[in-house]
Length: 414
Image 1 (tube, rainbow, N blue to C red):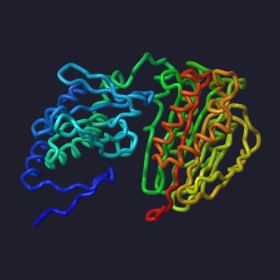
Image 2: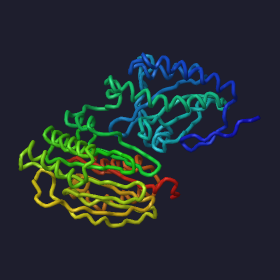
Image 3: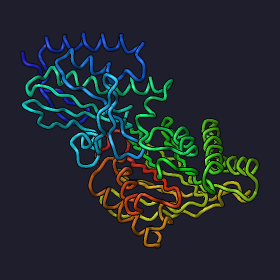
Image 4: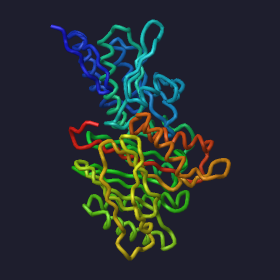
């Protein structure tokens, strides 16, 4: 009896290989897992390539996205690394941006590209060459890609190797501190997706964001510490640390703001401050509570592509010792709504001609990328890329984006 088609996470539907091919691939995966335990971070590329070759897959290579989210950089094979591939304009990049399987001709065979994810956070891609009709080899590649994501995250905890691979130029000390402070750039559940980006990737100082999804609440924060360089990154680290401490103590937004305000004032003096936006989204109802401490008001685009205002009375930035409780804004989101939080560096950075980037340019870019139907993570990547391109690769201030998409309660159809 023939096997039914199997649906992949990428959305592709393929024919399931026969039982013999499945059994052979299962043996390969079992041996791979056995070898993984003692493999080094430097050897992961070779390990995955070895397993693929046993299953009839040639030229299997792992690629990681660089910190600037412009290139896919290969892990070494046999001590040698090939050239990086651009994310934009390549088949490999399309697999990464669409988070879906792609393929291209390869000398009578097929080059298959699959996204490599940590949960829903994009790490890179796996590229492999297979015979066009070898469903067993394809099935193996589709299992190697998620295993590679798990291996990369695990081995990256005790090695700097993957940091070196992803770094395409020198990174400042403040930027390295900020990257270590960040959560994964993307998280997705059936009800909500969160994605963020920082620029300049290799020299960011005082901007940061954080989130957590606990039960039925998505907790969100974006921080912009006063100044630049190491002092700003230290203040951002303290502010994010205070935010996490309050969140994990089940403090509400007002008490969280109060605690951040006190610790920033105590550690950095009354002349230093950080702006912040703190939010909580009920993922079952779409009710968003927002506390705005000196940030620009967020942008809200609906599933129909139209903007809706977000009334957002600002409180004082943290560190200035506010006497009155900060005002809270409550907004009820609709399924498919996308909320964009951003630091003032996005709209206040000046273009090479001297004029500010401005909110109107940001609104148009956000509307355009939402209308294109990109995922939240790709929408944010494209926003940050186009922003940096318009500034000819140079910005005078940090620019941070944090996009929240509410998909509706579990089972809702957009």
